[in-house]
Amino acid sequence: MSTQQTVLLVGGTGRTGGRVLQQLLGRGISVRAIVRSRGKLPSDVVGNPNLTVIEAILLSLRDEELQQHLYGCDAVISCLGHVLSLKGIYGSPRDLVTRAAARLCRGVEALQPPTPVKFILMSSVSVNRPGGLDTRRGAFERIFLWVLRGLLPPAKDNQRAANFLLEKVGPNNTFVQWVAVRPDTLLQGDVSEYTPHEGLVNSLFAPGSTNMANVAHFMCELVTNPETWAVWKGKLPVVVNVSSKSA
Ligand SMILES: NC(=O)c1ccc[n+]([C@@H]2O[C@H](COP(=O)([O-])OP(=O)(O)OC[C@H]3O[C@@H](n4cnc5c(N)ncnc54)[C@H](OP(=O)(O)O)[C@@H]3O)[C@@H](O)[C@H]2O)c1
Image (tube, rainbow, N blue to C red; front, side, top):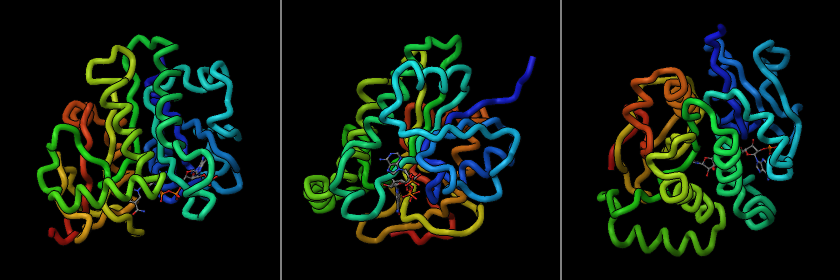
């Protein structure tokens, strides 16, 4: 019996998603990537025998088609993000990240896998942990974020996606377990020393930094290392570079 893991990845043509794709393949993991355009994939992954590319609009796939792609996957990673243009920020779908998370999780649930599938979401430090647990967020910053979510659909979308996992999928789901990874300001650069934290490390007004390669590395660890998964499942870890200055 094969022990090779299989991951379904969405957002693999993005800055972070492309790095996740490269690192998953580098670890010998089999990847199914749903992308809008295969031409935007990192050039070094093209032709990799462990990569299956599905050229499709994720939110337009029929339920049965999506379930076919999800069937047999050990993990699902979403690195989707709104394109930084007027159309990407204010155009449709404003709830891209939330709808994608909901479709993917509901698709897994419909398949009723024998062991829970890991769902890993690329989130953001603008996303709150519930219950005021992010104690570093002062009153002024909370008001600022509240206004930001009213003005910028992607900010609202990222919070709603995390809320979906917290409230609708929940901590004891039989079929889906999840982690929402919250990086600070994204930087280029190689994998370096980084630390996942339970709560916020920096303020939005004095941000830290996170190499996209480190986000990818942490996501790969979540997929492959059961101990890492056991520590972080059902949580919203904040991932920051060790070299990043604390506020
Ligand atoms: N910028 C930061 O400092 C920062 C910090 C923390 C968290 N984040 C969050 O991290 C996430 C990813 O960031 P990133 O910079 O890696 O993203 P990115 O490079 O902009 O990539 C976005 C990905 O989403 C896909 N996408 C966009 N709209 C889509 C749609 N309507 N349907 C299907 N796919 C769609 C893109 O596909 P195409 O290639 O086809 O366009 C691309 O693969 C974002 O949600 C962002 O909020 C950002």
